[in-house]
View: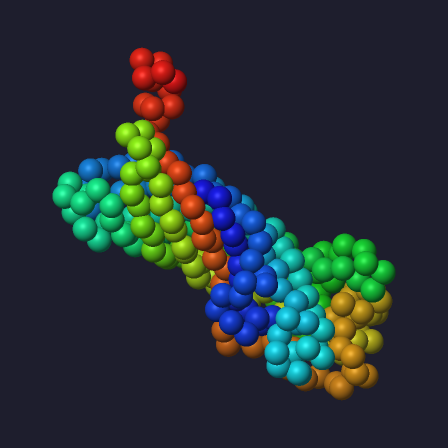
Length: 241
């Protein structure tokens, strides 16, 4: 599957924003049972990101945060055809499953140098001065859910369009979740770069105010066009392959 990836979290105001879509690819190996339910394993890659400069809310613009992250996902998914596949050649389907993914948010500092955010503890994660803020893991679980529509392209290939959300259990895809912390403590513990990238506002630091929304977890999604064929078509020389 070739398509796009996106994200929804503390740096976005819309569920799906055209401005923050980026390329993605997925590779699946599927078992067709011939019944309503099929099973597949998949490996996906996509880049997500967002920038406060694209938000319409003035306070979010002044926050001036941004990030990007590569996502690598491994999943196990069940597809359920809406119509009887023995009767209808073309059919919508829904899917759901489980997965694990790796992410690592980064940004560019004031000198335009690429900098990974996880080691900097920009919200005090893992520091003894903030015991309620645990260091987040870069490997997380997810629940892929979505919809698709498949139809034959010719006698060997099928084509489908698919869109799927990934429900996650982390609020740190974007390295933003709670409130700002004391920048002096952060600079002392993690260095001046941590303080610089924790608060990037256009006004003097106002003190410990809200940076993100910890009540809502981040999500990401994949969407695109999928081409599929059977392994026998790929490897059976009697059929010209």
